Each structure stands twice: as C-alpha cells, then as structure tokens.
Length: 115
Image 1: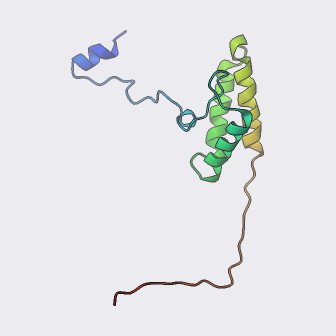
Image 2: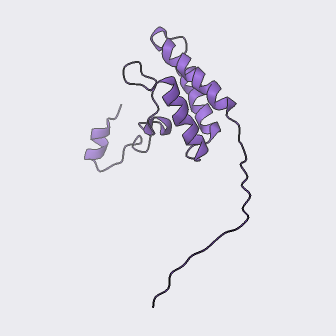
Image 3: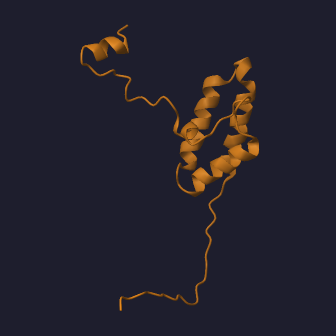
C-alpha cells in the first residue's frame, strides 16, 4: 500500500486528501459520546436548529443517522450510541414544517438624509 507521505514526497496528491475526516453533523457539535456527548435535550435542540435554519436538511440528517446505526449496530460497545442515534432519527423524522403567517397592517420606514 502506498502511504500518503510517500505520495507527498514525490509531489503527488493523496487520493484521500479530499475525504472528510469529520461528518458535517459532528462539525456542528453533534455528539452522543457517554463521556463528552450532549444530553438528549441538547441533541434535539441542535438538530432542530440545523433543520430550522436550513443548515442541513432533514433528509441529510436522517441519512447520516441511518448510516451510523447500520455501521455500528450489533457491536456491544456501541449499543448506547445506536440507541441515541435511533432516538434522534425518530425525533428528526417527526419534525414537521410549520408555515407561520404574520399579518402586517402597516409598515413604517424612517430614513435619514444629510443636511
């Protein structure tokens, strides 16, 4: 196997250099680690913000959580993480788009001019 250092020493680019080392979800602070992870409430708040502000789509989040679960299910040491991912998957699945309408009767515009 050709190592990255060898390729770089020959002035070549590693084929892995464009791969993400961190998921988009994790880069925004999402974490289920028992030692340093977020509480369920914190995770739900973060996930809702990501969807509400269109930082990530529901589908992107659901696909990533589904992938995490499929990769780690059946591993004894990952049981708790898989359970948390499933809880978050269910939470995001249940998020519904709500259209808020505001009736505006008047709009006042103030501007300043030079004297």
